[in-house]
Figure: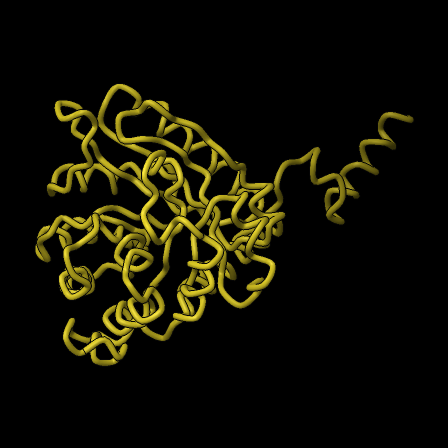
Length: 299
């Protein structure tokens, strides 16, 4: 009789929403997590264009020797970038702890959790979704490499981040870079490899996928059409001129990408604030490269 009474009480508590740990995630919890993620995604894509113009200063492991000018004094660079009004800035957690308090709430923050070199000499996860959420970030980025002997390890890193982030309503942005190991892990940009990079992001649950641009509008458009989640472009290697980088971004927008995350071609420019303003003109206003330069006061 006692056990029967306990069973009745237990069922009653379930109907009234108690003991959620015992019965698994309820539909109401799933809805709450979906809402939390949607709020954060909407902050990233808040511009009326529906596209994202963000900047990344998460390149630490890529410059173990010879830091470029824009990354020598990162706090000063961040101040310049914020003046350019990015839709978000991606950085590592330590830089966020040391610099972001002054900008908290002014610009969405994305924390990079992946840390690797193209040759796979370094492959590490350096942040978990729970601590990213505690830092107040709107998303966690996970940079991974595909192709090569450690592809499975990278994909597991992404899958684990997605599992943990989904449970707390935190969007995951997969930064996926295909490599050619016949050339020491060099990042490649051809259609088939970028298609595979996007497919990996889809299959392992990313909410946004960032991949390099193929260089061709038609091929990139074809790849984007396969994805049920937004695809944004990586800003690419440093271009000879800002005009060249903007021309590339014109093609990215024409291909239907939901924007881009730019690094070297913004913080490596003589005036990062104006360079970012020029990229915003292309991504959000559909401006040509020459019109964007004029809008930013650079020509």
